Image (cartoon, rainbow, N blue to C red; front, side):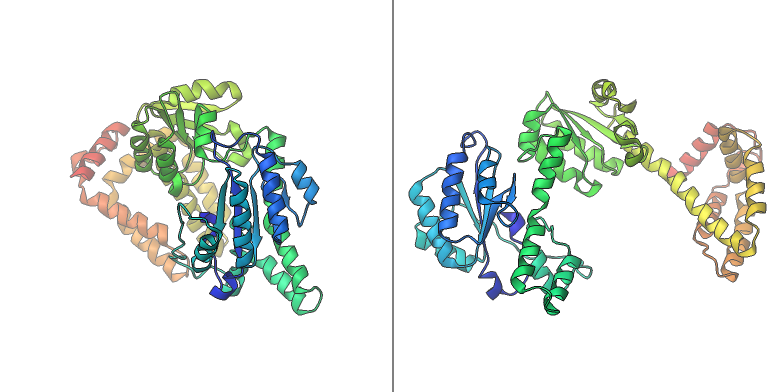
Length: 445
């Protein structure tokens, strides 16, 4: 199991840690598994598995053996640990003799696991290797802490909790054995809580993306922008013409284009969806923009359920482009406010400056303000850039940040070099399209 491989700690300690799993395969041996699972439990108990449990219920450190047995369903998956190689050998021998037809996984140091398999008369058909942890590791806990937290494949043991348990052991408040049980319970506690929450909301847990796609026609990818393409690549292996894949991740337009290209071969429809508000505030009613071959279908299917979806085009990447480019203004506006008001506050003139800005902005509606500012800007860019040079010096002299002011000065200098004042004959009575066309042509050069 890949999630149980990335262990820290010295080799000698890892030689005393073996993780075992019982897994079923969808469509092969996933019906009426309880009798087989009970056989696995009997063998695990007989050879002394120190802790074991069912992902649907939890570990025996938290629940009685009878509770775990009673809760076994066809969705159950058993897993546990051994601390001795001899236990692994005995376990594999007995499971092999019973010939239950279920998959068995053993995770541990290969120099110990492979000989154990050989002694038990079992030949592994595949092996996963951990090549260690790479990249920027300076924010990781120390190695002693990682030796404990990485025992949990889903990383459910917080480093601070480890430190808390250590302090209690060191002060003699609890024994090492008691501390170990506290940590083990914490590791296993997430699964039953998640299953309980799924039952409460009507969500149906799936074993993987293949099962999810088999169950649904509309697939919504909501992970992170950095993982969007990887998820699409895996989904493409299972999607068909009947499916609609909607990607709601915050990612670049180019990423959305690549996701679409990845899915094209499957014949599925695709929707690039940009969430235009805070999900915690709006929940599923958050305003959305959608583009792509499946955008209209997504709108038709989901609006009856309360979603607020606006179709913006047929091309993948359009919705994400709107969100990203809108952020240039909205986040840039925020940065300008931070820099401006940070400086005004030093002189106690916040109210005066804000009142002046408000009166200026109120003179025209927003679109006319945009047109007028651009018209004045492209014609007077040289003079404005000189003024911003003085602004930058003033901010630097008072020890205030000047990042946005410097960027404004540089942008105005660039605009001045385009000589648009001469192009427009120093006239400001130009339409927004005329100004933008001129800027775009010059940029393309």
